[in-house]
Amino acid sequence: MSLLDIADLTIGIPRGRATPLVIVENASLRLQPGEMLGLIGESGSGKTMLCRSLIGTLRRRGAAILSGRITLAGTDLAHTDEHAWRDIRGRRVGYVPQSALAGPNPVMTIAAQLREAILQGTPGTDVPARARELLDLVQIRRPERVLDQYPHQLSGGMRQRVMIACAIAGTPELLVADEPTTGLDVTVQAGIMQLLRDIRARLGTAIILVSHDLALVDDVCDRILVMHAGACVESVPANAAPRHPYTIALNRSRIELAEPGAPLLTIAGQPPSVGDWPPGCRFAARCSIAQPDCGLGPHPPLRGEAHANACLHPERAA
Amino acid sequence: MIAPLLSARGVAMRFGRVAAVRDATLSIAPGESIGIVGESGSGKSTLARILAGLQPPSQGEVLFRGQPVYAGSIAYPGPLRRQVQMVFQDPYGSLNPRMTALAAVAEACRFHERCSAAEANIRSLDLLARMGIGPDDARKKPRLLSGGQRQRASVARALSASPALLIADEPTSAIDQSAQAQLLNLFHGLLGQGLSIILISHDLAVIRYLARRVHVMRDGEIVETGDTADVFDHPQHPYTQALIASIPGRRPKENRP
Ligand SMILES: Nc1ncnc2c1ncn2[C@@H]1O[C@H](COP(=O)(O)OP(=O)(O)OP(=O)(O)O)[C@@H](O)[C@H]1O
Ligand SMILES: Nc1ncnc2c1ncn2[C@@H]1O[C@H](COP(=O)(O)OP(=O)(O)O)[C@@H](O)[C@H]1O
Ligand code: SF4
Ligand SMILES: [Mg+2]
Ligand SMILES: [Mg+2]
Image (cartoon, rainbow over all chains, first blue to last red; front, side, top):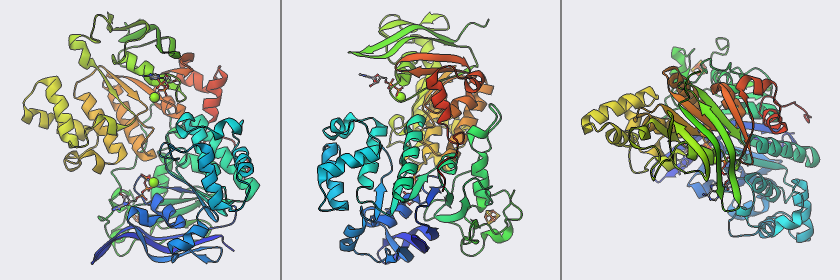
């Protein structure tokens, strides 16, 4: 059975009597216990909004679930009120927010941050002991020293390890990490990725790792869900050849595969903005194999099981 | 040998007890691209600011076209000033949030070229178009542009001075993969037109793609220097080896269930 089952999820901004502004449309996704999924897409494609729906914080960005289902091991997350979220957030779903810089509360010591996370995640535990255990889990050496420090006294990588410690304080079944290493050094990034894999191996946590770096998620995850302009366009096993024209193009624009000096293959233009989506496939204006029927009707849904693709003309893509 | 465009010899920078840069020596020829790679805090930005004339070093000398950059009270005296331009990691910092991209570039154009407002507009629209920003997007304020567009707008602004040398400090760190590819292509085209580029990054894959030579910095020191391809294939310093091993897509795949 799946741990997480998202079906036809539409997220948007309600606008009084006007029709809501749709930000994520008909997203579908299934996650097995202990699976590590990479969620990628250009800036603005809706990755953070999808993540927020899993921890019940859409409202803080003025957004709401407009339709669809989210089920976490039998629990309905799509119709959960704030009171019920308090039992889920931190206990069943942990969250590492986007940006290492915006991370922790600047005026609280690490000990205080961890204490808050522990009280939320596993009320009634011995806080100091659990705090040391968590710092040990995220491989912070000399935890006694770190506990009394403030976030600004730590390096970006250490701060992010603390954020991960807070997120797993309640031993959640699902950990959502929204671009946990964007802006950090590649060596630090490699360490954090190894840490996420260790956590998955030791605690059996399923992980959703948001990134805009295809090479990174291809390396670390079991499967990759690709978003473009609010739609899921492909769900591809790591290391498998992509089949959707957008993913194919993204894959070709990877610099570490490029010959130095040879022009990089890029995707023309920008994705259409929220509120400005054309009918049909939203990649059509940038797609080299678009056909007349691509611009008709609703956005094509993901089709297929192990390797799902939303392109209407997969046989033409190469 | 071609005379270098810019050279630095024995440059050091201390901030109190912190030695941000120690004894750095490097040079760049006209039309050449060099990379500076290193982790956060290794001194890359400090060195870049020294080379750009924004920060007098505590020791050492910087020469641009054979003339000292820091002589007397102002760096890059007279006509040399505009020949070196810098772009930063966070284009928010360098673009005025209340000005459209077009207005920002036109302002720089008028400053450097002393041309009329109408001329500056035409020149700026052309520069922005070359950076892949059409007339509609050119009239947007920074917050309505994507990160990649903002970054290309700030490159357009830097280019309005018709510089000989562009120093780019982590220009791709804050933008997504496809925007990164667009920006690197653009830099590549500029190199083809004779511009020299100093590219600073913590990502060796970016450096490998664009820079012919690379300097690896650690704790304020240049620990390895060489042709990028050589350094990439045969890294000597353990730190360089660690950097290369950290590039996604080059890591071994273990720990899979
Ligand atoms: N309150 C709001 N009103 C209008 N549009 C919004 C609102 N909140 C978010 N959006 C838009 O929804 C889209 C998706 O936002 P989201 O933060 O999920 O993107 P993302 O994929 O996480 O991007 P990034 O990679 O930049 O983090 C964006 O175009 C954003 O501008
Ligand atoms: N204005 C300053 N005052 C004090 N210390 C500084 C200043 N600028 C940089 N430093 C210190 O110098 C070192 C190198 O910094 P920087 O050049 O910004 O590194 P990088 O760009 O490689 O991340 C760091 O330890 C940083 O804290
Ligand atoms: S559906 Fe059509 S436009 Fe969309 S990716 Fe496939 S071929 Fe291209
Ligand atoms: Mg986001
Ligand atoms: Mg820097």
